[in-house]
Amino acid sequence: MRSEETPFVGGPLDGRVLSVLVGATGQPPKTYEVPVPDEAGGPPTVYVYRRVAAGTTRRLGLIRGWRYEYDPEGTPGSGPKWPWSRSS
Image (cartoon, rainbow, N blue to C red; front, top):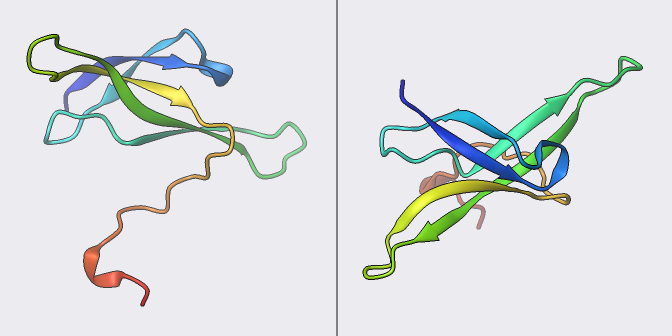
C-alpha cells in the first residue's frame, strides 16, 4: 500500500504530520478517526478529522495536496453510503 505524509490541523494532533494510507485513487480517506483509550476503562474517546484541500494550483485550480482539520462536533463515520440503501 502507498502512504502520503499528511498534516493535521487543530485538536490533539495539531501540527503533526502522519503517514496516511491512500486508496486506489491516490486520495486519503475523507475522515480520519483517532481513538484515545479512557483511563478508567470506559469506552475510548474518538477524535474526528475531516479531509480538506491543502492548496490549489494557480492556473488550473487542481488540488495540490490534502490536510486534515479537527472536527470537534464530528461523529465517527458509519461506512460507505450505497445508493440502493437510501431511506425513503
